[in-house]
Image (cartoon, rainbow over all chains, first blue to last red; front, side, top):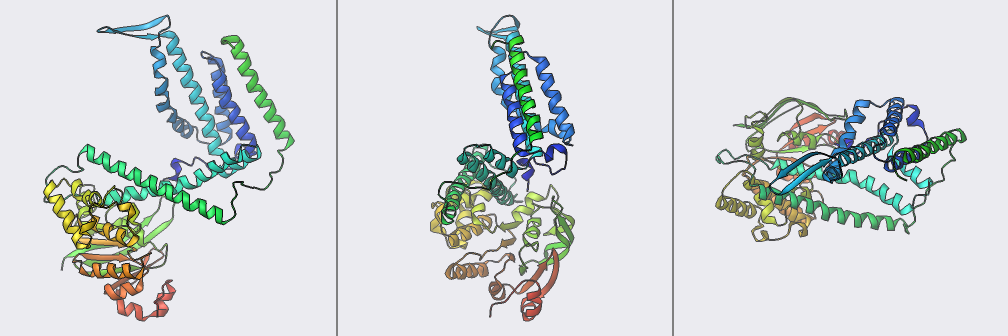
Length: 270
Length: 237
């Protein structure tokens, strides 16, 4: 029921939606790669990429507030980069000394952290743009015709198919648990049991889900074998990309490449 | 007689816009044994999920006189034992004991009471010796009976079962019917098993397209095979 949690795709008819899936995939992967390769402290380049993303979002008729809200997904991952702030490299901004431990927030660390944050955020926006304008089946087709290893595409495809089933299974489990989470009028005690007990129950649910998924995977595999699966997934050929679109794609990717080279030459160390 | 379930003009549509229930009204008195029959997708399960407040549509529902407000929901969930179609959804603990004890422990009952509730519930379904078994390894028939025990341990007033006999072999089905006959609670059973209905449940409610199509004496409803078939049902000869 809550499938929108995993499926971002919005059925619309903007120019971006109509664009060949392969073109979008190559372009977005290039954007993400460029974000990774840009040096720290390259603010003009970040702003440029951000403007490109906003322009594309506007062109695709997506609600910009929706995309921004979704992109907050990056926040928890930023925590892993948090230690960068405290990595001492001069000049330091703030220095705390508690007992014998000195904590330093350095300017270099802060800049690296912020840069990393912005780069990750831009990558997530790019990924959301792709996922919201391209249906998953189209993405799979694109990956397949771009010669992504077939096994990998098959894994993505099956994962997508069964993720929904698993979600529904989780929902039914939670529903069954909720149904038995009642209150006895004769018992004045606190509802819900102890924290440890609840953690145990949740663990049991996760375990049961795991065992059932494993069993299902065996049944699915058997049914694939029964239909002649031999490890190779075959599909129909895709038509070639239109030459006009292809030209634009080459220009865009070359532009990104140039941006990375120039910013690295000007601001970073190659 | 006290009213166990009272539904007035209940309508519900799913978030995707699909209208599942339209103007459903149904009164069930305490101790009644009622069947809920109808084709797949008629709205049977959706209706059942309203009876302990997991879904909430528009209209009036009262369970043992209680409206499903936020305050009352925990009480209603203890009063209504809902047994789901797939027992695997209901059995999520490592052992049978822990599954049956979930409800009582959640209610904050003390250890001795929990143990006696579990014993009682397992006795009711004739599975006392299964306490330490692993739920996952049981047969479907055994799982269904344990699933019933997991709600009996909360000592509900109303027992609601979704497709209790589906997938059971004849012997397991026979045992289930015997078990259901022994239970004193108000019973509402959604099922396609019309023979079970004829044997066990004197009142039948036919639901089709999210509406109540017929409600009355089981024998009377079953005597009209033309009407049954018009709702996608068929009584085996």
